[in-house]
Each structure stands twice: as C-alpha cells, then as structure tokens.
Length: 424
Image (cartoon, rainbow, N blue to C red; front, side, top):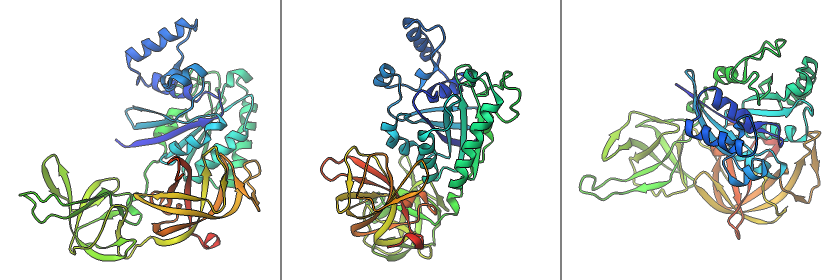
C-alpha cells in the first residue's frame, strides 16, 4: 500500500484543523480515549458537539488562542492508501511554518471561507505550494452552509482561483465545496449540494497519482558518516553512510565524490540488519545504506557521492528564490550559514534581485531589503564550493536553508535556480 503526504493550509478560522479532524473521525482513525478527552473538554466549555479541531490543535497555546501556530502531523489510513497530514498555520505571522510542511508534500489542501472567497493568504499559500513543487492542489471551499449551499458562490470562487493558478502553471487543481463542521463532501457525499458531482475530499486523496520519479532522477548520496568499525569481523572495512535522496546506485557504478571530484567505483552496497551485514544488489531513495568504494579516497561528512556521468553543479555563486522567515530584515552583503543537504558553509547575500508581489505576481525590482514572509530572488556567494541541482530538477539537492550566525536560528528556506536567465 502506498502513502500520500499532504498539507492543509489557509487563513485563520477557515477550518483546516476541523477538516483534518473530520477526516480522522469519519475514517475511524481516532483513539477512543482521545475522543473522550476532547468530548469532555467541549462539555466543560458548554459545547454540545465534539470539537474535532482539537485532534490536531495539540499545543496548549493553540487551544487557548484557538489558532494553529505550528505544523501538526497526523497519520491515518484507509483500505486504499496511507496518509501523512501536516496541518500548517493559517495566520500570516506563521506563514514561514507552512514551508516546513509543504517542502515534502505531494499534495496541498487549501481552504477558503465561502463568504470571503480567494484572499491574499490564499494566493500566498498557493504560490508557496507551487514554489516548492507541490504537484496537486485541492481548494476546499468551506462553510458552504453559511451561503445557503449556493452553486453560484462555489462556481464564482472556483473560477477566480483557477484563473489565478493558471498564471502559476499548476498542473492539477481541484475545487470541492464542503462543510467541514458537519462533514459534507469530506468523506461522505453531501445531499445538500447535489449539484456537485465531483469527488469528495477523501476520494480525491485516494485516487490522486502519488507516484514520483525519484528513481529516475540523478543518483545522489549525501555522506553523513564515514564508517570504520575496526572490529574483529571487519578489520579493513571502510564505508560511506547516508540516505539516498534520489536515483539508484548499483555495485559497479562509476561514481564521483564532490565537491573534490575524486572518482572511484562502487564495490558493495551494505545495509545493517541488527548485527548482520546485508549486501544489496541495488539501493534507491529513500534507503539508508553504506557504500564501499574500490579506491581509498578522502570523503567526509558533507560530501556527496554521485554517478560519474550525471553530476550536479559545483559552484561558489548561484541565484535562488528564498522565503524569508525571520522577524529581522534581510539586507544585502549580510553573512549567514548555508546548509544544503549535509553540508554547511559560510555564505553572503551579494545581491537582491527582486521581490514577488503576492497580489499581482509581478516582480518588484530595485529593492533594498526583504521582510518576514517576503518571497525574493537573491544572489549568494559561499566561502567554499557547494554542490546542487536546479530545484525543479531535484527538490532534495536543490533546496537549502539559511542560518543566522549569531542566534543559530533558521531565517530562510531557499530553492536554487540554475537556468540561464538566472545564472550569475
């Protein structure tokens, strides 16, 4: 059985947590003791119905404020598929948290209030989803009961949103009218909206194509550890351990270690099962393995093993799109730590190219600073060479984070762009 990793996002009080709670409740994925605890919490507040949003609003601060301030992860399954859900914050102050959940999502569920339609935060979340390469979007138009289940209201919002997403080139966009509180069109089809003949939310989640092409991507193995046990059973053992992020490796492959560029051949691929060493005929993402090489070359943590004829870029300068997530302002010529895969290097923002206007999708040039939640294109120079792929070619080796040197806080998430129009 395969699994689907998806994220929910929207503006405050659009019903994200309630939608997830309804999915869990109607698919019978809620533990009895947890449901009883939520029911008692509601009774203490005088609420007659079960507050399903509390199934994901796990932080005490969220329950007190009634908003989601962090990404909450939940798991459930049906007969057709397993699911990993990330409930992202809705308030604009926490837009940066959405990047965390969307970066690994295969699908995004975005909610809007039927009374408000598509708003700025809807556009921002949609753009972020497209920016990090989420291939499937479901727009849930919630609270349809508050607009008398109007097909006209639904169609107007749908047309507005589809027109916006067409500018982003999103390949798969679906719009579903729902009432998350009562479960209309979540798991069970709504009799109150018989004019809608599309799938329910769960039906769409079960049938969407989640098959990726990660095995077809260039092989990449960021090195996390160099293993030399020096034990009686393995006196001459030397291996390079890590998690394969894309592609397939096989014994006999001609490989290269970057950024130094030293070449060798894979002699064995090992996986430890408890205390036993198992040799594999091949290994693919996302397997954690140890690779042994024909030559005793100098490889350390932060290097990457790649196929000889499918190399990534190795540069000290590149252009990237970043989402600025810090309350402080980004200025040009500021120094940071760049982490890409397992490699960390000092870097400098050498230029600010432009900033996205989330309302018009136009680029604002001649900018002097970048503020929190801004999406901007910047130029970066690193102290030593780093390896990367274009983000649209390989998400795993084309993404990075920026870390403040003094506070050690993550201040930005970035996507490398290496197409000719953006090269430095």
